[in-house]
Every structure is written in structure tokens, then in C-alpha cells.
Length: 283
Ligand code: HBI
Ligand code: FE
Image 1 (tube, protein in one colour):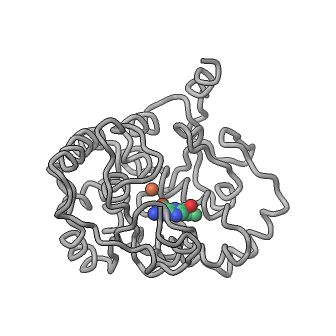
Image 2 (cartoon, rainbow, N blue to C red):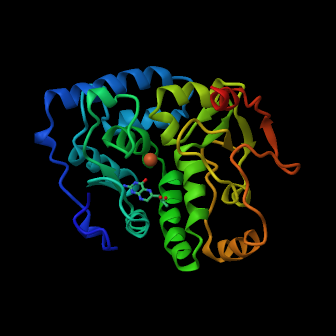
């Protein structure tokens, strides 16, 4: 898929978005996804997300032009979206984030894949991820995540960073004065999970704790059994390298947790019924 799979130089993976090559069908796919998602997100996503979409000029009409979006993004938080062909190696991903560059797939799913794709496309990456990068605290968190990732690569603790990303950037929720809201891009770009994560009685919703999250395995094949909830829409954790190293050392003495586990020390906001995954397992 990429020109040089063993390279850890980000420059080997960057491409041009090729904005003028999108077809009318490509733009129509974006329009269908964005229109549906924006309606579902109203009242379920943090306000900053919808503000970010508007301030970036991300519309329901068609795929955004990265050049236009980047002018606004750079002026606001100093970030930039760069086009990549698909998943890039972990170290490349971390280097880009540490340099305030967000890698986004430039391609878009085909109409027959409208609800399921295996690799992130421009809809997931741009509609799902980029709006919150207009918020300073989130922009700083992502940069710190990239720097922590480079450190984790040296310590052999990449899996802990991947879990943190999964349970915050992809599948995070946040407590807000208006109630529970979505902050994760994996939720915000999925119609089914947008409703499930906020409203279903099935999943656990547990107050975010850095060490707890780094111990917890996740499922990539279905909705999450547990969501971790930030204490506010801006309550992204600080990732201080000096504190992460001893944390990783302590976690190595503890067992990993399964996605549905609930511990006596957890601050449980909703104890899930587990019904959704139980029914699937017996189907
Ligand atoms: N590459 N393009 C892209 N997008 C991602 O979200 C991504 C990636 N490479 C690695 C990765 N994510 C994660 O596994 C890291 O957070 C560990
Ligand atoms: Fe993603």
C-alpha cells in the first residue's frame, strides 16, 4: 500500500490530496455521510466539535479541500492536515503528531462500503478527527500523544499508547453540563455507535483514568463494551514523559484487563447490562 513499508521517515508517506481528481460520486458519498452524521451528532457530541466543523468550512456538500482547511487550522492551533494513502507505521504516525501534522487518508469509501471500511478514509479522518484540532487543549494533547508515542516506542510500551488513543481520541466520551457527550472520532464518524455510545444501556461508562485505560484491551470488530469518560470536554490528560515512565513500570506488574471488565476501584458512571454483546455472542 505504501511505497516503502520499512521507512520511518514521514516524508516517504505524504501525498497530494489530489482534490481535483475526486469524482461527483466521491463528493456525493461525502455528502450522504456528512448529512446523516451531522443530524445525529446534534445534542450528542461536544459543542466544540460542531463549532470546529463550521470554522473549518467542513460542509455537507462534498469532500473538503485540505488547502482551504489548513489555512484555518494553521491560523488557529498551528496544526495541518497531511494526506496519506492509509495507515502509516506507528513511529511515522507519532512523528507527524509530534510535529502538529495530522495524517488523513485522502481516498473515500465506495457507495457499497458506506457503513463499513477496514482502513480509515477521508470521511473518518477529516470529519471525525479534525474538528476538535481547532481546540487548543485538544491540539496540545495530540502533540503530547505523538511525543509520548516516540518515547513508548523506545520503552516497548506501544500497546499502552494505542489503548490510550483508542479510548480517548477514537472512542472517548466526556461529561458536560448538558450531559454525556461524544469526543471520539471513531464514534463521531459512525451513525450506529453515535447512538449506542451515548444512549444504550449495554456498555459500561467509567470515569477516565490514565493507568486504567492503559491496562485495558479493546475490540476493533464492534461497538465498545466500555467507554471511558473525561471529566469535561476539555479534560484531556497531560502526558508528561517524566510521569509516564514510572507509570509504565508499575503497570507491567499488573494484569491486562478485558474490554468489559469492571474493577472495584472504578468510578462507574453507568454499569452496562452487556446485553448487546451477549446477544451477538449467542447469535
Ligand atoms: N496511521 N494514518 C494513520 N492513522 C492512524 O490513526 C494511525 C496510523 N498508524 C498507527 C496508529 N494509528 C495507531 O496504531 C497508533 O495510535 C499507535
Ligand atoms: Fe481514527
